[in-house]
Length: 193
Image 1 (cartoon, rainbow, N blue to C red):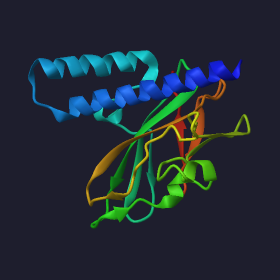
Image 2: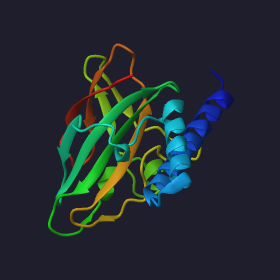
Image 3: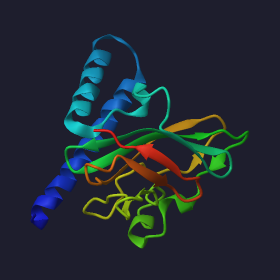
Image 4: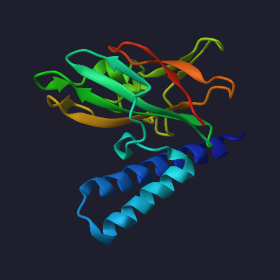
């Protein structure tokens, strides 16, 4: 594979992720009518292109894993989908189960300088393949930004935020991995697709 091809794939992945996020934002604005139908069609089309359904679309009633963090934070992982582009997208919901607002810990970004300098994110997340004895880190775009939800700061009591993370895909025979995120408990999740 050439470096140019890899860059094009990464740019395409980022563009597809941004487009899916914008489409889902339009759906979340509500209002009814033809505009809602168009937004649902756009979100549906992006799902077919490989971004995977988001937790807002009610993809799973039962989360794959619920991980507890500090200050009342909880991460419910709703899907881990293998995508055609050679990566795994993990979707979930970060919720504040506490009685007061919670500052999202900077430790969630991990400790890699390149990721930390791009602001708060879930860039410290990893997938661990015990059988294959490999650890997979969050992917980055060509500017070093992690391919994950970013800009997290404070979550009010009872509030939830939809989150995603993208990782390199483990081999096809690997269907079970351990998800790890700094300050949270670990959990075993199933990869589908």
